[in-house]
Amino acid sequence: MKPLDSKKDYQNYVDKKSPNSPIWKNCLNAFWVGGLICSIGQIIMSICKSRGLSTEISGTIVSIVLIALSAFLTGLNLFNKVGKFAGAGSLIPITGFANSIVSPAMEYKSEGYVMGVGGKMFTVAGPVLVFGISASIIVGLIYFIFI
Amino acid sequence: MKKLGKQTIKFDNPPCITEVASIVGPKEADGPLAKYFDQCLEDEFWGEKTWEKSESKIIKETVNMAIAKSGISSTDIEYCFAGDLLNQCISSSFGLRELNMPFLGIFGACSTFVEGLSLGAIMIEACAQNVLCAASSHFCSAEKQFRFPLELGNQRPQTSQWTVTGAGSAVLSKTGSGPYITHITSGKIVDMGIKDANNMGAAMAPAALDTLICHFKDTGRSPNYYDAIITGDLGHVGKEILIELAQDKGYNIKSNYNDCGVLIFDKEKQDTHSGGSGCGCCATVFSGYFFKQLKDKKIKRLLLIATGALTNSTSTQQGESIPGIAHAVSIEI
Image (cartoon, rainbow over all chains, first blue to last red; front, side, top):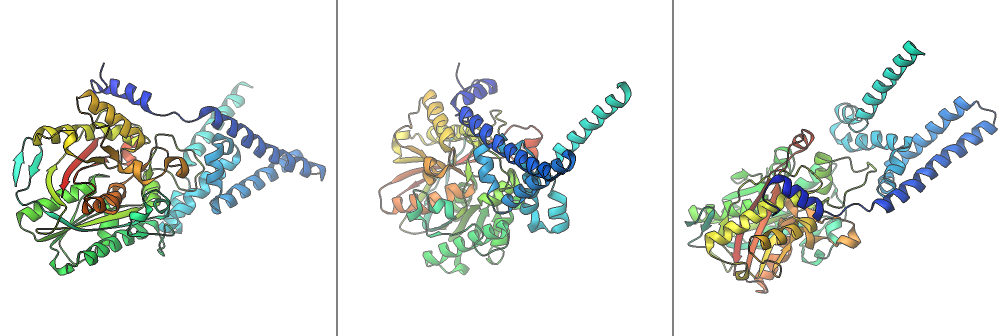
């Protein structure tokens, strides 16, 4: 079999020739950075609760602080470095969501505040919102009808 | 000029590459070829408000530099062939709108520079005395258009390439002391079904192979004829693939073949994964490095094959595969 015999053969050949991402290193970094971000969230939660705030309000404060921190680091051009190092570790927590909204807002500011920042802000986070909200509606309906 | 075989033109009076210029961004200035470029920028904006404006300024200043270095008055340059990667080629048309000469905008993705040299050479042979060719790309504007915002915290696959920030420009003339464009081989569109926009090298390698073999068949030359065979931006992955594919077809290019995308960055130190890409990659490496090698006669026969991935973000999202193209020029002194 020669690589250029068919498109399928070429795809298989290319897959063999292409270096893979260092998956174990990436997993390890994602694990500890993701864990660290969650631990920071837990510390903020514990501080809030020790000051007598309810669990619900403390949780909201954790989200606000982590979103603000992530947005701030994105603005300083630092979050992308964290993201490159940690991958899903910084993407999956709410920090990644904040970054995915702030980064296009910064990028498209050159196209104006309305069509640039406003229009493009959700180009990355849009699908997460659409399918996140859709899924929650379906779950809500199942809960309403059957439980 | 005379047609050889299916896709090659041989020039009776080979056009001379009179002068070249190159301007690159800060990342390229940290790379192994930094000392060969005419100017290295300290930041990606170069005093402009947007990356698009910055890219326009880069190609404009590169063109002005090439004209100034050539000693030819800009009024004596009769045509300009230029292109870039941005939608509707705005970098070159905006950057060169004050050039005040007939302008022929071209798009061949990352193969644009050699496409320009090919068309410019034909124009010289046909009627013109002096012709200008230029191409540019910019990492930030390309990322914005083709991929994700720069500040997004994601990881790049090992096969991905780094778009070169920079522009290269060449002035071609009817007479001069060389180097000369002796042959051009215009490539066909070749699509082997690769859909991964992060593996452009693999998508373009079959097109490079097609043009390479066609050039050898049309001219009757063999790989040994050339001191150097250089592709535009196949990167590390595409380079390895091309060597193997050529070997498979009976052409051994291992000893004299390299790729501009491999040469422009230090893969390990600069974290550029599979290497450089973009119109600016081939344009700056030729205008910066190889032109001087030809002038100093360290390389006497060069086959420059610029490769292009004819894709955009819409076709990628619609699941289309990536058609590749490659154009070759034989440059000799």
